[in-house]
Image (cartoon, rainbow, N blue to C red):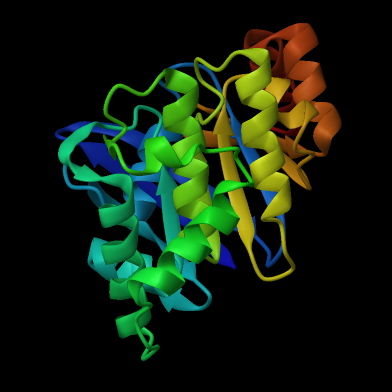
Length: 256
């Protein structure tokens, strides 16, 4: 689905990503974990095409197409979705308005017929059940007055409506209580299909207790430190990142 090779990215003069290699196959769920400042959100933002980042070298291909050469709206049309760590409020534009415009814009780019109001509302109500989103919130301004959990559930609803091929969720579990975390995880699991891949960026194992990944990667100092199965996330929980960094340093030294 997505293939990243030796990706180096800077913010201003500071190099953040120092040669990231990562590949997520179709239908797979991968988690990227790492300490603060390791480059996790930078990776998500660069893949989505957010401004303020300079790609110095490397490549990222989505389904064999050069992702980094596309404008953000072209990446969305190609099937990429980014769920934000801190979803913004947009007063004056309702969730329904935003979703309808976004969905029909994607459908037009894909030479599909736009949905009318009745078709769209039926779709949103159906998908809203994934995350137990009350219809009153759908008619409110985007994230306006939402709790942290409601904002994250709204991100999952947007994903459910837009049906991306690759969903990048940047710390979706951040700030969620136990019930909200479970609802968000249920929404993610309901959307897992052979044709849709997920890249879950998180600090902690708790989301991965509900959404079991196919692969876990530890990002440290701008590089993938190590990769493994779900047991790697449990090792982080038990040992912390410093212990893994020390072990990786020893392994590299022994090879040298």
